[in-house]
Length: 504
Image 1 (cartoon, rainbow, N blue to C red):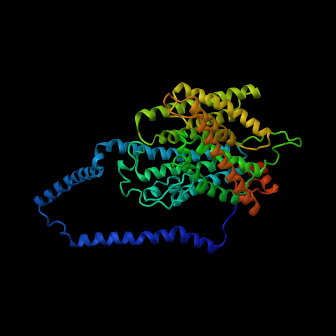
Image 2 (cartoon, rainbow, N blue to C red):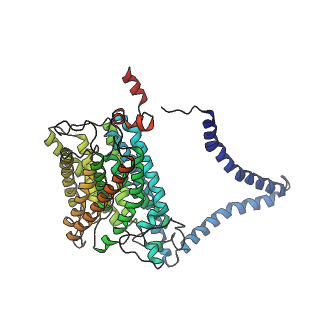
Image 3 (cartoon, one colour):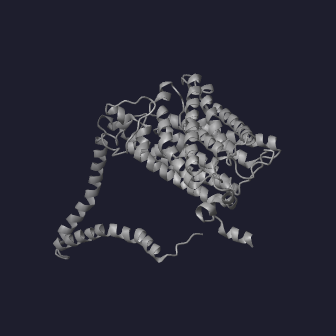
């Protein structure tokens, strides 16, 4: 493990992490102390206040907070203007929105533990580092330009135009201004504040790169991946997302993708496919005749925890996409999401039992995710029975997709391309085949939409990841891959005690 031995570096770290924060807080604290001291000096000396005056003062102090709080609440409601009657529903919906955003955030922990569990222990630190970076850079880039690129509504409102394909957004400002903190921001269909809208959508932005992270695990160069992930979540995702949710070309053809089977999941899956084709398989994955050999993950308990965390977070992913606390749609979406996930897990486990003569846990786990991806496009327009069928079919699809890609020489350690790419396609088509009567989903629009998203993601990866390969390389050396990326890229080990015992 790398250590810092230079005393100067120790001093610098102390200065950055201890002295500077203290220096920043000290003036404010001193100012508060000074203000308190002055107030004490100007006040009446202790003991000079009569008993009657003291009692009256205590009564005023006890009554004042209650009155002030009531008046403050009335001011908040009054700010809604003609929509004041909707304030309780608006407040409830906003609360649900931030809770849903927190659930989607938890999905990043799920992605991390799933990827760690299905890969080898010598790459654990590398995987955790990548996933920490992805959510962090995703939030920053989405604030800097992603949100307003994704949703070019402000551009149009200011007299500009959006051609349906591309518009570059600026950094977010005070999203509470100009009615952004009231019901009028989005009404019933987007019942949240401007900041609620931003933080919920920001949690989605990094998802595509986590999908790629799993597919390229155990052999990608860290720096190359970080550059690619930044461009994918910061530029490509908001642009493609604007085609659908930003009122672009996909919205214009009536494309149905409720929470992102295509725009989020298939986008990440096809981006991952492009990267894997450039990167190549892991060392030892194929024998001399090109036949695939299994490389087992080191921790199935962690993988299971990861999938269950993702399932839990998906309630925010799909449930939050109702965009309000409207009871009818919210209850339906929670139900269809749950049933599809359960059906996917069962069907994938059963199919793997038939194909491999033993029930495969990793296939069952990916089956649950396949069902979740399959229902994401249509959770609000299908009935419970249909959601079970969608999940069952997704579970079957993911097993055969993983096997087919393996035989085709496409090495995907966690099955991310099959789960998100292949089953993302299925989810878009299922929206047409299982829609509630009157939903208005058109098959041609669904096919055009998934084709456009898939091609865009794949081409972006081929061009950008290919350019990175040409400039600086994208794959570690054979020696570094053998040693593990924890040591070669980070100089750290996730399980140093076990390594030490194994050496002895």
